[in-house]
Amino acid sequence: METYVCLGMNKSTLYKGCLEPIIMRLLKDNGRMYGYQITQMVKEITKGELQITEGALYPLLHKLEEQGILETELENVGNRVRKYYSLTKAGKKQTSMAMEELKIFMHSLQLIVNPKLA
Amino acid sequence: MLAQEQINQITSFCGSKGVKYYDVQMELVDHIANMIEQKQILEVDLSFSNALGIVGNEFTDAEFTAIVKSERRKLTHKMSRMIENEFFSFFTPPRLSLTVASFIYCLLFPYLVNWIGIWIPLISYASIIVFISWYQKPPSEEARLIKDNVLVPMLSFKIKTRYEYIVRIIELSLALYFILYRTSASSSTGLAWRITNQMILSMQGLLMFAMFFFILSCSVNYSKRNFYKKIMENYPKAFAQ
Image 1 (cartoon, rainbow over the protein chains, first blue to last red):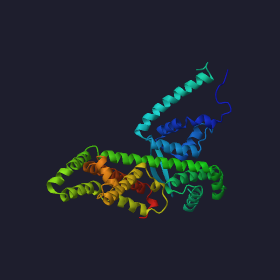
Image 2: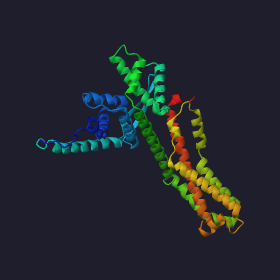
Image 3: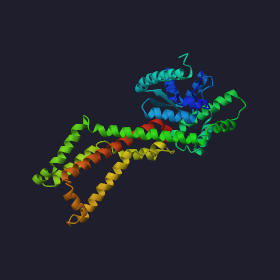
Image 4: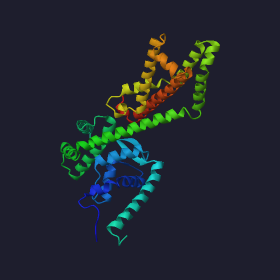
């Protein structure tokens, strides 16, 4: 079997393009979440395989908020302020579309990596 | 749960990394505080300062810069959208009727001047502009009051959209035009005189342009005031009560 992709690439590079749908999916399933909670949940689900850095997570969350996909809510937790992110109505629609696109992408990857299984 | 003093230390740490704005710091402070709490749960003997040191090393300076940049971009976009919505509301019902009436008044202005003299039409024009821009509490004044009440540096108050620059440029252009007009109107070679005569810049055109400028200026002021009000609601601790 021949492998064409990802030689010498690290995992974070591979996951980078999928971060957006991953976050949107998590928010769809969990309602509202804060930054740290997202990083921990991703780490837990992928058993430590995918660790989102803060430098990647927050700019992405801000970008999604700018695009109207996410909305924020501030809440006082003890002596600090916590910012919760949740999907907007448009964001929920976008999530379904993003998941479809991700499935197509995964299928295309299968075709390349493992044509027999695909 | 971390004590207030420890939260203050995390805030100072963020400040030392270039995140000096309260509205950006808050999110990072909560994130770092969560990381420290988690570390202390796993390692009971770990002191706060050691935990902060470990957590701090997990961040690079570039990450802090990227977070501030993305927040600035988001806020600029948010404020621009607010200004655009406010501006277009002048061209949709119910405000549209007032806008159309104002523009029709500009078209009729020279005829009214011929009919009843300059003063009544001029005062009416000024009243329309005052009505458009000041019928609520002066927005720029309210925005300034909110800004003056803030206790810590906020990124939201540093945001400048392209619309503000456009308003400033038009303001300067209008001021320059009137200065030129006043200083050279009597001379047939004066620049403003030539602009007025050769570029078909009619009185109606000028009045309409000024009206359009006031609408844009109002949109910027209203949006800024509403944006600042929202910031005040979201971060009450950052403002003097």
